Length: 268
Image (cartoon, rainbow, N blue to C red; front, side):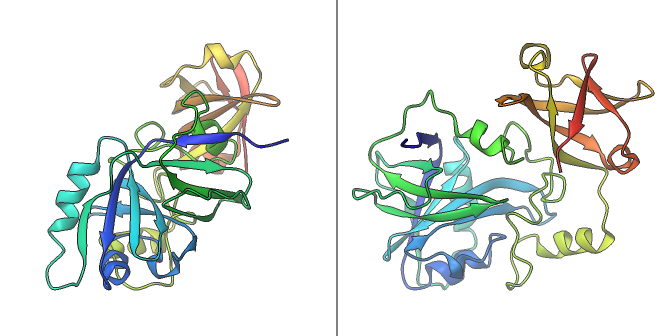
């Protein structure tokens, strides 16, 4: 059985020139030096105070480094990155028109006509990420594939108000061994403090929640207090997979949670 292709809507930028990787490595959270032909990358672009501007998917063609940013954010991100392009031998531009990111859960899947492609491992999920002229069927949403592994979607499950720890991407999209990047000091201080007020988590519940737990539905603790809100709802083999931002104090209590009167459990 051939796994479906999943559309990954992105605005696509292209970085060219011999300094393209060292320059971008100083701006995003992942180790750009490890992105090579056949190996993709995933990271975050942050503000100086450590808030997420967008998540980024990276693939390398050998001559161009393609950067996939959140839909509608291309112009804003390009303007932001341009400010940091001073003496480097690199050029930032919009990618050629008609290129689309797609992902496959078959990590060895080949894309002969891809402008660039590579394997990508996120939270135990190994994918093949490709930039092609042919988009995947838009009815096949990558968000369900990601949610099955507890990964959120920018603009839905996490946003500009979140830092990497609040989005639960601190061990997914951040390299803790590379050099400096934009917002690094704040992220490192947060990690040393070891606690945030809230985190994005995955919750599993019954099938009745597929229609009864819309985004922003309240997550309640056993005493009836509101401890968080649902950000997205997805179908899972056992019923419903919900992504929600919950207070860390409630998570540490390991108590019971419910949504719309139905029990839910935190997925490790």
